[in-house]
Image 1 (cartoon, rainbow, N blue to C red):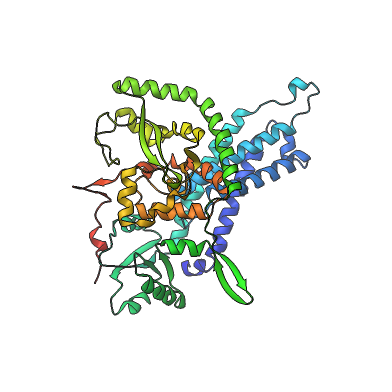
Image 2: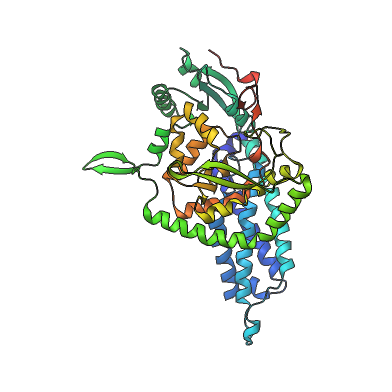
Length: 464
């Protein structure tokens, strides 16, 4: 039976997804029809509610992510789909309130009513999404077994990061082998696998294995290099009938910089005014905690290597070693743990944005010592300085505090080369998800002289 169902898995997922979205829309309409009969009767109100809900949900799922069971774990799906749905509910609710405006008195043109109904909709939508996410993933993995996966890498590679990531997706991937790319029987082993992960391989060997896997219908994952990012983001051009890939290397244009700066100036001003009570409360809590300074200033680098002083709420004890935070770091204050967990210590950087040192979206401003150290082993790390440092960004949203320098660089380069105002807006919305991720602020594992991730588990030892 499972084999028969597996043939139609894409159709099954489509049906489950459709049922979820219909249920969300139906719940909204049923609850709001209690005090507004037009919502469930053929009318202009009903049509506007449906169109607004569908259009908003489509846009929000493009920002936060779709209901992609089988590809992501249940919790990330719940976070992204619920955020998309909650915003959709608010937009549709606002439109419904506008449609209900029929009072002749100008002072009564717009009223917020049925607020508790909106809260009830949120609760039911959250429960619905939780049920569909867990049940959908369980059903999917009951039908589809984990993919037999091989990791092909080098003897000297640090497998800790990739092994830790894969272990979180045991229902999707079953690691069968971890082998060195120089093995003479590598092709024979590959033919028995569903998926190959090519990690930290020489370019020539990676190209060969990609072609081999493509020929034999083996799924491929590979960690990208800078050249891969440039190639992936290139446009297709034709010289007569000769295909070429073209990349314009120029950073942000003058027009893009002007729009980005105008956006930063406007919204940083609004944010500072609106959040001023929060600033005061946090400052008071820091003072009550240990009586030390409220703000922490540190030199960071922004566009073209320009040095500026970043402003943050102080989360560490005063007069301690100034290096990146580690797991269970005893330098962090009591209130500092809370501020770092929810990224509230970053709020004063709104002043940096207002002054023009930073922007809302861009690469994270690294400490000068980190830039120097990372650039010794990774000279391309300086490419991040082609744009202003940002309060949030692609690396901050999908990565973590202890994401490796190379992975940060790749993510930042993807943002720089794909820059658009829409992408900035999308990343600002997605920043909310970071607050829900427990591991987004996890520190580095500390060894004698360096900061690194945990050791590679024994089952991931490389077969030479």
